[in-house]
Image (cartoon, rainbow, N blue to C red; front, top):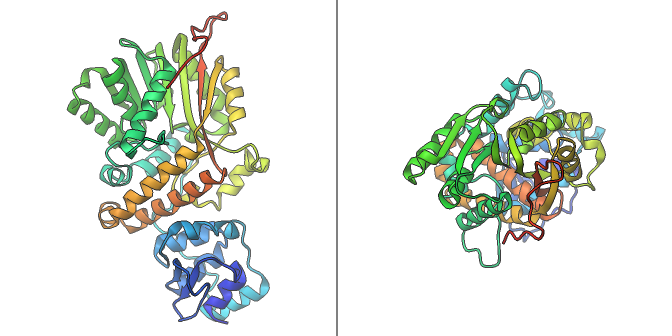
Length: 418
């Protein structure tokens, strides 16, 4: 049996992409525009010892498996490997092809995260954030473009650039929060400071941001100086749980909530509520788990699934997604009155495609800056995420809550955010 025969028996012979292996064997459509290249026996070893998305992901990050052509065509067959298992015939074939060490586990690529300690402890959260964000500001500039914003943009038919779409997202959030000159804004997980800079420059607020990534905080402070708003922007390196200088008139949380675990939801929202002035607003912008997803993938079942999940190992260690109904309930239980909810699923698919185009256009620069393994991780995960958002395998919502006191929320009867 050839390598192509083995993979055909595992993945099916009706793949829309071609497969070419190191032993000269191949299968797939003759007119395929995209090819999966199996470069070495190590690819088979990784697949045999983790025969699901983690094994294939490890092989791709390590360079044992490669992709030629459109990565989205490959992502389209990803469902076939999510819970893959090798049968006795395939196991025997792997032994014949690779030898007696076919099921000898290879060390994972060095980019794989292996966190220690209690999940969502301060130390472990800091390590998870550092793994993802402390790569290189220049690498992120290549991927994200001038906006340096690592969250879903907001698009319209007239949007011309990613930078404009990100500015429109920040403006939408500012309007939902009702920001006015002199207000105090707290941005939880402020990243490279995009929300802080926009709110200070265009709405005259005093903007405080907190992030667990020191390079992000340094970048935000530098950009504030360059834009002439340093006196209005305070980008802090630290844990949100240590913020104690409320009250704030508004809180934004944009793309940070995915790092808040299920067990921490109540504490997280109650902390936000405690930091807000009466009638203050919270805007929570986060990826959501679709309600139609398997309910067993939440809570303790989620922990079990993540052991073999590529995204958890390489991209967002300890990340957890919550169904938006659970988010609304948790906000209500913490003392918020939820006044507005908006879904932006299609917008994230568009944003991710722009990031991938940026990465592929400057691939060599990205590899020089962060290494080939890291560039491969970002290419693979962003393509998979874009595919998932387009299919409603993932959702994203902005939920606006108000710290209502005795029925008084100060919210307009018919708000307009456009």
